[in-house]
Amino acid sequence: MLNTTNNMAILKKNILAEIVKLQLEGKLSDSKTVSQIELIPEKVVPDGTIPVTGSLENDRSIVRARIVADLGFSLEDYTPQKPLADYVNQAFGRQKPTWPVLTMYKNACNACAKPHHFITDACQACLARPCKMNCPRQAIEVTSRAKIDPSKCINCGLCLKNCPYHAIIKTVLPCEEACPVGAITKDSEGREQIDYEKCIFCGKCMANCPFGAMMAKSQLFDVIKNIMEGKKVVAMYAPAIGAQFKGLKPGQLDGALLEAGFSKVWEVAAGADMTADNEAEEFSERMENGNKIMTTSCCPAYVRAVQIHIPQLAKCVSETKSPMIYTALLAKKADPDCVTVFVGPCLAKKREGMDSDSVDYVLTVDEINALFAAKQIEPSKAPEKPGKYVPTVSGRNFAKTGGVAQSVKIRLKDQSILHPLVINGLTKDQIKILSNYGKISAGELPQPENCPNLIEVMACEGGCIAGPGVITNPNLGNGLLTLYANSGSKPDADGIPQKADIEKIAKEQI
Image (cartoon, rainbow, N blue to C red; front, top):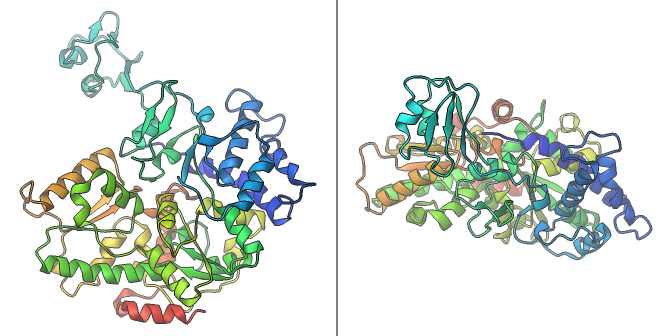
C-alpha cells in the first residue's frame, strides 16, 4: 500500500513551523503584523517553484487551506475569501478542540476515476485466452489484443489473476482502498467525502492520499497558547516517539520537550506498564470465568471499529485503559491543575483524548517536530533529563506489532493459558476476520481448534511506529524502537513492577 506520510509530514512541518514562529513572536495576535500569516503560502511555495497541481495559485490555495486546518478548523466549513486573521482570532477564543479530528479539502482531491481493470500493451492475444475463458460476464473480446467491455465488467479480477503475462492492471483509489470500514465514498461531483459516523480515524486515508486532501486538525496552536499563558502544560510522549529521532538516548526527548516550553514530561511507557499489568490480570480472570476471547484495548481506532462496525466483538474488548489514559491520570493526580498533552503518532488518539476528562490535547509527531523546528531544537542534542521511573523493555515495545501481547504474556503466572493472535493492521479483510471471532465468542459460530483467546489489534501495519503522524519510515522506526527500548529500560527479567509501585514512582517525579 502506498504511504505518503513522510512527504505530507515535510509540507506540514514547513507550514506549522511558520505558524509557530509567528505565534511565539506574538505576531499572530498583534493587529499590526497579523497579516504576516497571509504570506505563508508564498513562503512555502515561492515564485519559480514547479507547480504540483497545475499552477502556483492552486498550490498556494492548498497551503492556505492547510493553514486553516493547522489552526484547528474543519475545512468542510472553510471559506477561501475569509482572511486568515479571522481564523486566528477564532482560534484564540477557542476553549477546546472541535469535532471531528479529521478534515478534508475537496479542492485538493484529484477526483480519481473509480477502480477498474484495463488491459495494457503487454497483452499478447494468446491462443489460450485465459482472461476471456475465466470472465464470468463474457466482458472480454480478443482481436489483436484483449479488450474489456466496461458495461459488462464487474471488476471481479479473475482476468487479472489468470493472465500469464501480467498484462491486466487494476487501478485503485488510494484513500478508499486504504479505508478498512468504507467510510470514504465519492460525492455527486466525483470527489471523495468522509462519513464521520463510520470513520474510525485510523488516518489511513490521510497517509495514503497522494494529494494530501485529508488533513488532521492540529491542536498545536492551542497547546502553545496555553504555554504562553503561563499554564503548567505537561507533555506525555508515547513509546513510538523514541523511534522517530535518530541517535536519541533515553531522557533526551524529555530534555527537548522541556526546552520547547513544557513544564513537566511523562513517558507514556510507564502507563504501558500499567496497561500490561491490568490487562494480564483481566485476561486471567476472563479465562477463569469461561470467556473464549479477549482483545486488547489500547488502539482507539480498533476500539471505535468494534463500537461501530463489529458489535459482536464488543464484549471481548478489554476494559483496561490505554497507556495514554493511565499516564494522564497520573499527571492529573500529581497536579490537578496541569494541562495534559499526549504526543504520539496517532490520529485516533486525538479522538480518544476528546472522550477523556484527563487528556486535554493530543499532538502527533509531525506537529511536535514543527515546534522543534520553529524553536531550533535538535532532540538528539538535547540534555538527558529522564524521569525517575524507568519503564520496562516491554512497556516501550508497546509501539510495535506484537508488543502488547508479549507484555501481557510475560506478566501471566501461567503463560501456557495464552494463545495469542496478532492483527497487524486493520484492513477490510481483517474486519471480516474479527467479525467472525465476535460470532465465535457469542456462540454463533463453532469454536475451531487452536482458537486464539487473546487478540492483539493494531490499526497500523507494524504498530504505532507506522501511525499516520510519524516522520520516520516505519521499517527504520522499528529498528530505532528496538535500540531505544533496550537502552536504559528496566529488564523484564528483573521482575515486573505492579501498578501500585508504578504510581508511587511516577508521583515521585514531581
